[in-house]
Length: 439
Ligand code: SDX
Image (cartoon, rainbow, N blue to C red; front, side, top):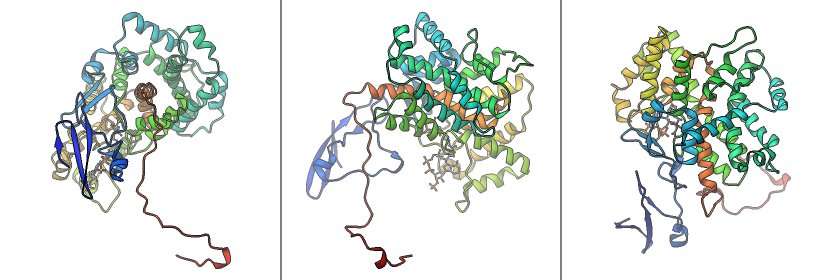
């Protein structure tokens, strides 16, 4: 394939075909292969979509070599330090930082929409007590499309906003309440309703930890940390769950259903489910008393399934900038509260050993966003099985932003990847009495 300025050429079976180069504003340019099959009869093969893009996006830029992550051009380091999760959600979804009035209106709408329909609350109360909160979250988010169907939306009309905008605030606000109710269900405590006098994160913490016998004392330090950690999870380009939201959403199904699919994808241990697996792994290692070097050796051993959870990344081939910030937040908070967590000690020793090990160096495996996030959640009192729920709450603005961007893209194409067929050629039906056992 030879490149001239804005074209790429493919020479195949004696024919040269030209393809346009799409220039990015940051990062890799792309070959537009939308005409590849017509021109050459070929399709492409790219397991895991490592070098393929299906979308043009203006939301998030990641430079995996330099460890850069920017939302709408703004470095996450600045947002985690200076912004709030609600303000960052607005930035991701609408593409600009809101004025004070716009932010207050957005925040007030989130407060107005924080309560769940009583039938949804009753639905959660009938779910089996020891259910993992992630399927509760995906089920109840999908259920929002029952209670807020596409039919004439009275609340949107009353608020004089679009159906889309009212569903954004419903989803961002209610996901907190659903998450907190799922937690209360798991510990057999009564649900705590949202309050109109609390900010987004303070409201979530209060719904999680307040009880009829012991009100929760809002700690501004804890609220600040939760805002920062949710900001650091808010978007990450075309990761597995965001691509799922786009693909499911490309059929023009409603936002709630597309996000439900994203929550299901996020639960996987290779993706957002890793934060729970990291803590379970660190706890096992700490309890086992195994040497750190033995753990590193096991992680490298191809003959066993053990991997160092929270390490490695498809895009980052250097330290994940989010992991760097979450690690600092974690150490600073534990020191400030004089919390000595042996899990953190194990994590720090593992990181130190791995970053010196030739295998991890050669494969450029560094801590990712999930390596330290669970330790922060533990310090905030959030139980392990709620960690991926926290990831989902954080990632929701990113999912919504990508769903919105896709739906505003013209022409709107339903997603349908091709395949390389390796199955049998033409065969015919065999009557039952003529069939032989083949294996
Ligand atoms: C998230 O995409 C995103 O942006 C995701 C995310 C987001 O914000 O949305 O950043 C969130 O999902 C973070 C990742 C959380 N998952 C984990 O921590 C699970 C452990 N990590 C690995 O499973 C793996 O690193 C992945 C899944 C994260 C990335 O997988 P890739 O890009 O498909 O890479 P790979 O599995 O092909 O690994 C390349 C090599 C392999 O060795 P070889 O076959 O070349 O000999 O590195 C090895 C792997 O075996 N390797 C590891 C390892 N991760 C990769 N070896 C030991 N321990 C690990 N953790």
